[in-house]
Image (tube, rainbow, N blue to C red):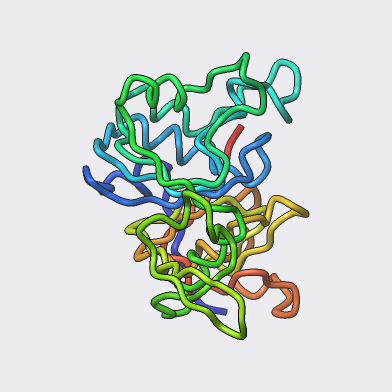
Length: 240
């Protein structure tokens, strides 16, 4: 057993050096708190880094819609960063609320031209992130062909079918959430809260995880590890 540890004493210590103009991948499916690193998001608000590019599945719909939130809970999403004028651009696949009668923080800012959007189909988003972590610079996909999403993108006919070229996505930081972690960063997720965690872990220069349970190194069966420690730089204990 090794004494080496990637554990940070507090959320603030784990993220305090995230500067202005950073690109940040933030996990979470977007409808409910599952997989969302809420404490890291709160910490990011406190340090006040500006002009951020946020990459994720949604642009924050949990707080506006209440989807997946238990009564009496204080679950949050990236809307608190948008409300705090910290975000200049969102890269997401589902940026708006499911009902036109509900406006998210992102929608309000977008309608005022205060924030940019790069809309990416969900499967394409996952593959762009995976490609970034795998060192694949770009790939062809049929998704989005002959739609506005194909504007200004290279296209090619392959086996009599049209494809468009999509480029890999990488980020300066990734903020993730795990169910269990050991002290060097081997991770286990719980159920569907795994969502984008696994692909984001390898696609960022610095990956920071908040974990519900932290174990001693060696306590996690290697066959049960979802994300290996090599991709993880910092770990902090999650709290309610």
